[in-house]
Length: 205
Ligand code: GDP
Image (cartoon, rainbow, N blue to C red; front, side):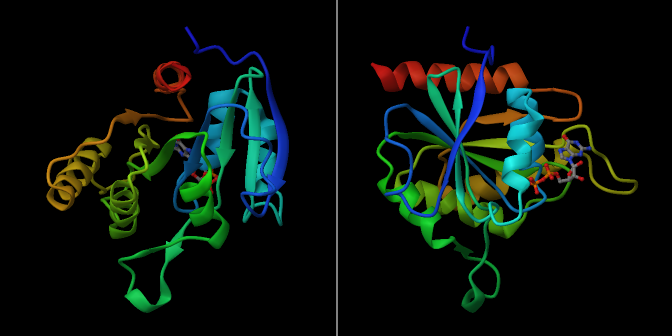
């Protein structure tokens, strides 16, 4: 239930919360470092290549892009994040609209924080998760690229375990839900859609 995507349409790009479409549906925001596999995941989830193309359009990569799924919920593509210049790389710096979006968007159900499982944990991703935890914004860690293994590199299982260990050390025991995915093989697609459906049901109650 809730795992079929019958329709998926691009609604609009926004540069502020004010510009976002009316807050009429529960929404799920997708975020991660650039190259984490965000466009591929949006494509895999919706089965619509055109949606991911929107996110990749020059000029739109720094905007908030709303996609309406099954006429019932929004999948929101947010700009990737980078380091705060002053902090020597350990503190996340949001695009100004993004921060405003997290804090002000009342229909935001959960953030899907994408983390690349083919590389060891990055301090930036941990810092981003810590920011959500501190701000009281619910998030789910969606590990990407489960199929990928570079020669001589650590396997995704080790990277995921290491991420969880570092994270738990930081956050004193609070563990967010996790979903393991591969856009290449389709792994985790129905699990992630079912997770979203379950959270929507709770939100609508
Ligand atoms: P974005 O910048 O976060 O939107 O990332 P993309 O979706 O454009 O993906 C970045 C790179 O990672 C591309 O070369 C993709 O082909 C590759 N990629 C994305 N998802 C997967 C995956 O599940 N498995 C593998 N092996 N590669 C992936």
